[in-house]
Length: 447
Image: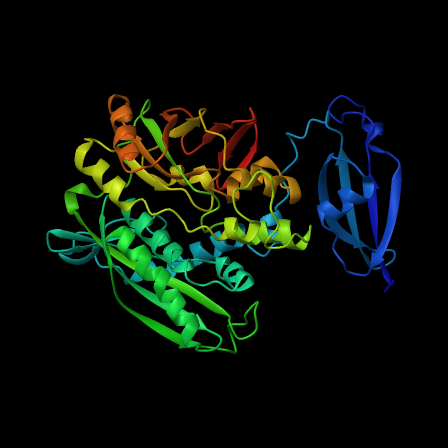
């Protein structure tokens, strides 16, 4: 095998949209680097000293049995709308497509455990894949869900600060329980550790307690698992994972799965405070692997040093959303905006689509990730919340009152769009930069 990997870099001089096919045969540059070292888009862009957009593909050169990477550099005038976005999230270690395939295989088995839906005890009320499920116990519905903090645990180790991620664990669970119209009641946690460090466990409990008090829930139990052969920390000996499970209550007649959403209903979006608990793998790749920023680096756009900005705890929306549910008739749907971004709206049962055309500018952390990670807008909107952490879909006549209620709790909320009866399960989005995107099946593309 050859001792080096070769890159073929194509730089079209004119727009591929208007140029003849022969224009694609642009001049080529070959770059030799260490064998099997996959180049980052940022490295290639720096080498070429260009701000052009790039697309990376990999294959095998049969003649030399070496890996071949091709980078197609497109000028700013190139029509990039027909190019599939780079899946940098998968390159950062999170493959959502494979996770979805695995989920479908899992569902095929576990559904065989379900009793009849109308079973008085244990009847499962919703399909797997919604934000939470509801189990029937007589005339009462018990909402149940589970989630964790993901790779935010790595960032906590990088910062050597562990007293905030418990808030994220609570938030990721109770915000999901809200989405079926339920009131969160209690949580249990699961903490897997590389080593049972009392100071680590105490710090995690501080965040869990603070988050539980914000949400008005109890933490009624948990489990600590010492599995050093599985958990390997970014900081040796400090590796951990933190997962929770939350329960809530909802009347069987009040279960909300979004089936009442109708064309013309208004999407009220509540602002996030930044990245929350999704997309940290891609953010770390952009800032610390591709560009080598330090945790205490201060960007002019950010109020906090970079590490602290990324570690901001996820907003907990329980009290304000419960108040909306108590005072606003016909809340048609609720959606926690996490991974998959605004495509979470398409999880509702109603066969509707959405137009999102009044988004506020997102927090600056997102434009920095997009810039320094060379992440296309399509993937940004697939991975991140982009400034909106929770959505409520309400009738137009209740939209302003919903916003007033949320404002009374100190939340910034906006009418960001509306439901349509055309193009069911499709999100058409225009962001604050005027970029038009179309999203369906967990993917956005340029319109």
